[in-house]
Length: 279
Ligand code: C2E
Ligand code: MG
Ligand code: MG
Ligand code: MG
Image 1 (cartoon, rainbow, N blue to C red):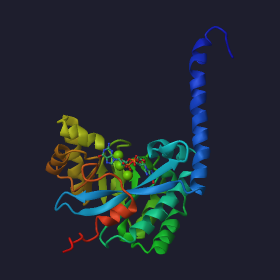
Image 2: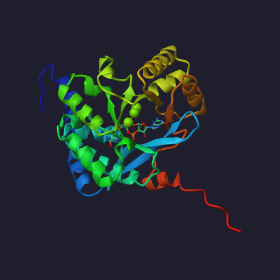
Image 3: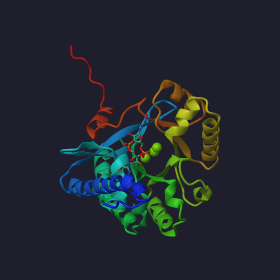
Image 4: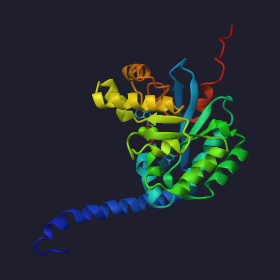
């Protein structure tokens, strides 16, 4: 162990850095195994129309339960998967699972699948989507892919080309976590998004009357309307948040207020005709 003058600071944080790297390495190994050993599953969170209150679709969210470590949040393992080049196989697995499970839902209910920027660097991605649709029997207009603004940071022509090729299949695109990342708006005119998803942080702010959050939601709703896109407010937890985003003109809402992410079976039950009492 280094002991010289000025080395003290190093000694203080190096073991921590090492522990972090080691934890990541363990997680990466465990994640590789998770894919092979069927430890992943997909849950679905309803997206509800503000007007009329009907379900417009569900967002597919991946879940991982490790046999010893228990449930691990995607906020933790997706970044590890992205670094370890595991996001493509995981993303394809989620896409296949979500399309297959959604194919049995009523015809106008969509399923939204998150796509990492890395997946769009694969020129084969549009073929993967086309094959997945064909195998599952889900019609293209019922699949929505969610991407974040980070896709556009490097003005990556390859990724934009891939996005336009998947669009040509007849699927929809939505822009996830809007306002939290890169903020040049030029790409909005070059890629056809159906929906802008407004991040929960602005929803919380608006419900607390934070002037900036209110201004941002108003601006996004106006922008979306003038570009012919819908808006979804993410992470609506309370009646007050719902009332606020409704008054600001958001078209759809998603959040714990309407429903937590649920199994495909529970999602399907929401459409089952209500059972009549016997006798
Ligand atoms: P996201 O795409 O923005 O998904 C919404 C997240 O907000 C989900 O977290 C959801 O459970 C959570 N959420 C929904 N309603 C509420 C609410 O009312 N309050 C609060 N506080 N949270 C709410 P989750 O499932 O932990 O996923 C986190 C992120 O991980 C996702 O954010 C997405 O970026 C990523 N992710 C999840 N599944 C996938 C996947 O299959 N592929 C990729 N590439 N990323 C994924
Ligand atoms: Mg999403
Ligand atoms: Mg989101
Ligand atoms: Mg979000």
